[in-house]
Length: 216
Image (cartoon, rainbow, N blue to C red; front, side):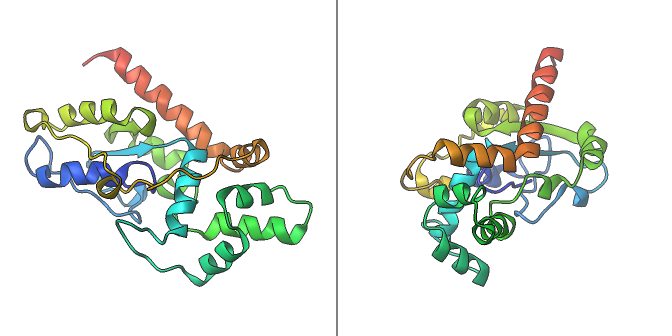
C-alpha cells in the first residue's frame, strides 16, 4: 500500500524489478488503493512517517506540482489554496486563526489537498485494520527506512538479490530543498489535527516492537 509522502516511491523503485523473484509475487499499488480492497488471503506492507513531516513534504510536493519526478497540474481547489497559503507554516498556523474565514479555508485545504489527508484514508477504521492485521507482513518507518527495508527484503525472500533504496532526490521523489521550519504554533496545530494519525503511528511501532520480540 502506497501512503503518500512516506517513502513509497523509493520502495517501489527498488522492488519493482524483483516483483516476481522472491517468495511472494509483489504488487506495488498506487495511492488510491485502500486496505478494504485487499483480496482475502493476500499479505501487505506499508510505510509510515511522522505526520507533521509528512504534511510539510506533501505541501511542498504539491506546490511544485510533483516536480521534479512527476507533474500533476493543480486542481482548482489547490490553486485557490496555494494562492492563499504561500507556505506550509502559513497553512498550519491558520488552523487556529481567530478569523472564521481563515480557519475554515485552512481546514478545507487540509481536507482536499493531495498528500495532506489522514492515513485513515487508507485504513478506513480500526475494525478493518485489525481484521487484516494477521496478513500484515511489515510496517516500515521513514525514520529508519533503510533498516526496515532490509528486513522487508528478507521477508520477501529477496535477500540474495541485495536490492537497495535509491537516495537521490529524483528516483526517491524527495524534496529538492529544505523548506523553512515550522513555528511552535504550527506544530501544535498539526499535532492536534493529526491526533489519530499519531495514535496509529504509535500503535504500529508497538506492534512491530512486539513482533521483533517474538523472534522468527
